[in-house]
View 1: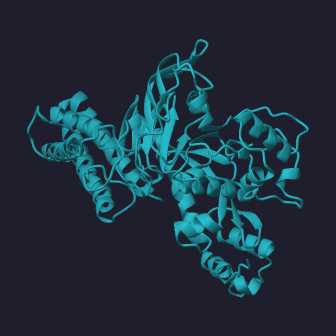
View 2: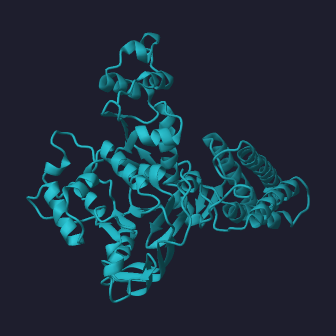
View 3: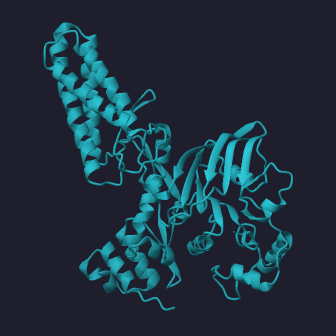
Length: 351
Length: 145
C-alpha cells in the first residue's frame, strides 16, 4: 500500500499513519525508504509513533482541536518542558525577580510590627507567586480553580513537596493575617515569615541548578537557549509527548549504539501499547510505554523488553540471540545494561 | 538529526476552515510545511487526517486557501498537482484477490506510468518479507500497509 505511493516518483508524499500495523523491521524499512528519498521528495506523515518522529522527522507539527499547538524540530519537542506563552524572556526574568522580592518583603514584614501593611504585602506576594511563576513557565505545582502555579525544571519530587508545603504555609499565614483578630496575628506573622522565606529559598534551589547544570530542561529566561514558545495550556498538553521522545533517545546507548546515525541504520525500535498515567504529585500526565521492541537486522531477529530494565534486555538477548549466560555476566549475578551492551558489541554481523 | 533542506514551503494553509457537516474540524488554520520530512502529531480527532486530505486534494476547504507545491488547490484543473503527489489514506479500501505485483500494475495504470516489472521490483526491493518468493507474489490484504 505504501509502495504504490512511490511508483510515479512523486515530489510530495502524503502518508496517513504509514507505520501503523507494521512490524519493527518493516517500520525501519519504511523510514529508511522515506529518508532515502530526500531531498527530491518531501514527505508529510501523520503518526502516533513517536519513534518515527525521533528518527525520521525534520519538522514536527502538533495539532490539537484543529489548531497548531507546536511547530518545531523533534529536538525542540523532546526538550520541551512546559514553556510559557510569553515569547519575550525579559518579562519572565522580571516576573521571577518580582516573585522573589515580594515573597522576601512579605517574609520580612511578617517579622516586624508594621501593622496594617502586612496583609496587603502578603496578598501581593501570594498573587505574584501564582501569576508570576506561571508566567515563568514550567511544571504545574498547584492548581486552584484553574489558576496554576508552575515552576521550571523541577526534577526532585521531595523539593516539589517542600515547595508546596511552603506555599500552603504562606497561604495560611496570609489568610490568618487578613481574617483573624489581633491576638493571633503574631502567630500568623511567624507562619508567613517561615513560609515566605522557605519559598524564596526553595525557589532559588530549584531554579538555579537547572540553569547551571546544562540540563536539557530549558530555562525559559536564558536567551542563549533556543526556545519554542507556546501557551502554558498547550505546554501541559505537549509535556505528554516530551518524556516519550526523550526515553526513545535513551534506547540507543542501551543496546550499545552510541550515535543516532548508527542506531537509525542498524536497530529498529518500536513502542508497545502506550499508556497515560497521572502523576498526582505533579498534576501532569506522563506518556509511558509498557514495553519496547528491539530489532537487530544482522541477526534478523527482534524482541521485546521493558525500557530501562536490564534484566529483561539481558533475557531477550540470551533467548533471541542465543548468547551464552557468561557473555551476559550471569556468573556475577544480575546482568547489567553494560553487560548487554558489551554483548551486543561482540555480535558479528555477516553480510 | 539531519539538517533539513531549506527553500520555500512544499505546502501551506492560509486561514483554512473545514467542517464535516456541522462538526467544525479546522477553524482558520494557518501553517507552512517546509521541504524535508514533516510529522503531524496529535490526539485522535485533532484534525491530522483532515489536514492530509486537504493536502492530497481529496477535500477542498470551506474557506481559506491550500497551496500544494506552489499551486492552489482551488484551481479547476488539479491533474498536474495530483500527478506530483503520492497519497496513502488512513482508511483505504483496496481491490481484493490481487497479488502485490498485480496491485502495483493496477496502480501504475491508474498513475499512467511505466508498468514494467523492473520499476515495480525496484519499488518493492527494499521491503522486508518473512518468507520465500518475494513480496510481489503476496496477496494484497486490506489490513496490511
